[in-house]
Amino acid sequence: MSEIKPSSTPIGRGAGFERGAVTLLGLLSLLAGAAAIVVGSGVLGVFRAQRPVADPLVVQWVQANSRLAAVIGIVTGLVLFVLGLWWLVRALRPEQRPDFRLEHSDSGDLDVTAGALSDAVRADAEQVQGVKRARVRMAGTDRSPSLRLTLSLQEGTNVRHVWEELDEKVLARARQALGRETLPTAIRLRLDRAPKQRVQ
Image: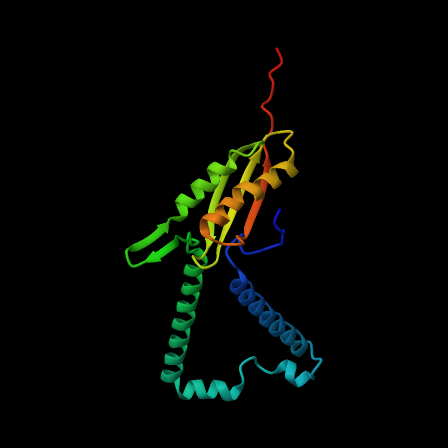
């Protein structure tokens, strides 16, 4: 049996950017709120607590250059709008299902689609004893593919046996087909409940 290593790659689309951006915005908001509480409570002096939020010099400059201030405000708003729209599209964009090029030669290329590979792995997985249904999805990229399996097991199935057969037969064939020594795989096991018996 191959070595099992935890991997977050196939579990879901990488959310590092979203988490980092939200964390940064949260920290900045927290710092701004804490600073407002400290200044407003008079810890830094009563005079500072009574001063307006906007500096009088800034207010005077905005009043003296209202047209330029309006242009700066509009441009800033448009930039923030475009960034927010880009972030929304990036978050809602469907995850890639990469196709794979198995062979490249002058006579032609041999490609296999993600759907064909998923169907082949699903068919193999459903042959494992104790597996009732299987759902398979390819993820990642063509250079760094990963696999997601959701297996519905019959009640009373030996999970260890399923795991061993899955690794030694199903995943081994998938790795061999792709010509890879490793194929990061996330496996979710679900136990199907036995049908209810009607008492007569």
